[in-house]
Length: 210
Image (cartoon, rainbow, N blue to C red):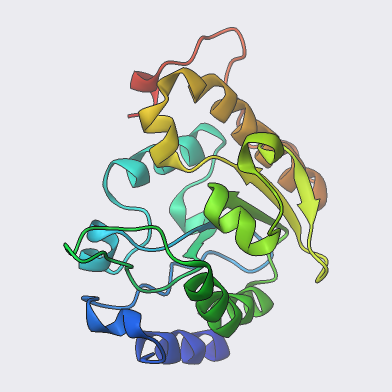
């Protein structure tokens, strides 16, 4: 890891700048792949992420790993982050959706700094919350499968959160198509041939990925 990125990560882990510090187990900065690679961004840590200190674990994480594998990538090849670095909880200590103010505060304070060091060739937003952080008027139902561009110049590919696919298994073929397109766009920017493609003639079911 780059020394400056390591220093930033250490700062993130010690952050006590907002009220989310009160109920967290630990800060979840994210995991880093090589610079100029893919960067997947979700909304915030959940129960298992807060426990383990790693983004996207549990069933959603397993599905994400399978989707990455389907295009020839693994976690070590990509960066996986959340906009919010601490788990948001409700009065019952259950997971909740981060508030807009939490997204804006944490994302502006930390996420853009991480992206500056990582300089990803392609950002992939996982779900509507992370998409709205970058594009406040966008809806994932309309933007999924498409590329948008940030003012900073980063291309952003919008797709669904793995948890949404686990609840809506009829969307798995569409999700597979999104990941195929992610690989194509990334490989085009690098001037590479696609690492691995799924067979289009094979129908995808949820059990293929879990």
